[in-house]
Image (tube, rainbow, N blue to C red; front, side):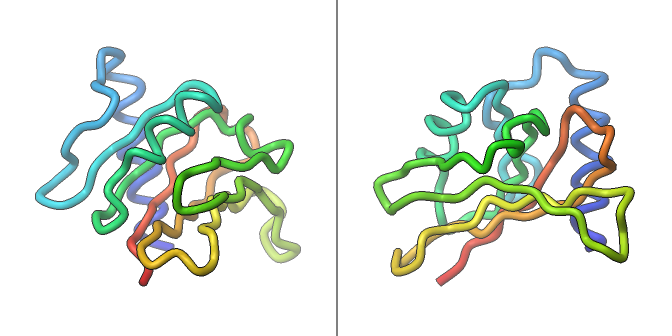
Length: 126
């Protein structure tokens, strides 16, 4: 949970102070930041991401509204958001990996319901 809050704060700073942020940039020695403005950009950039490295995705919250999928060679990733009954002021965002792929990324995060841009953490799963 702490990582999600830090990622959201970090992403908010990036998007508000650096409009010329590169599409994929180093956020540290091993994490990469991927920023996309629409579903096609997300599909292209996320599917090209290294599945063995942590990533932070900075995305419009609207991408999670209709439970879309990101289709990669390793299989479909499901985009969705939920409201937990014990925390109705926030959405939890997920980009769930396909089952059976040897290397894949599992992504999740949490943000206020009124946030237009969100950040989610992705970690390698084996």
